[in-house]
Length: 219
DNA sequence: CTATGGATCGGCT
DNA sequence: GCCGATCCATAGT
Image (cartoon, rainbow, N blue to C red):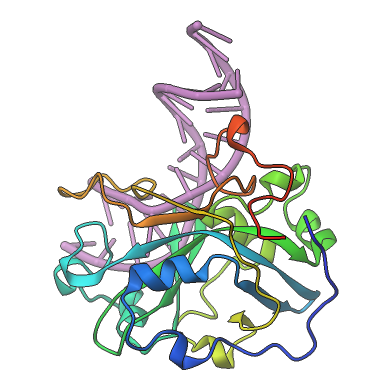
């Protein structure tokens, strides 16, 4: 785990990061990007190590399957960089919208490697070992101390929660698998989940698959 | 260490 | 009422 001080001038990913690329390509490219949240108590954040693509109207596992459109999933129909936060079994999950408005595709951020504000995150998830702080979509939102939908629908370029272009890292290798908890429809064997191979902060990774030398990063 | 079942709660129908 | 893009404690290897 490589810690750093807060970033004083965080810049959201350039809009060109999204344009002209399919959502699965963007998902893999998101691994190693820094996600930060300027919380009232201070900046917290980490490197994205796991994410899943949700491909909109044609995807039986997606909230926008067959263009389902209800108040809670309205942000999916916004422009790239829109924040989509939704409640699930007492936790909150965070998506980034990836395609042009009215094309409701997004990426679920599933796990972070802590990099900024580690002590705050420990405080937000008491008595958890560091490896369990942010290793799941609901866990990472608790670690960031986001427990409501106040930021839902904001563009992350104008929000305290954002994915930034500075200080990114590069995975040595990326693994893809079927999505976690998605058994809907016929896509049970898809490869829409991507994670940094060997990174111990990935959700549900087995201990014997840990790479504790470099956590799966180049240099 | 891994697999399984129950808790839990906001939002749709 | 019902149903999850989840988490964790517990039981079984």
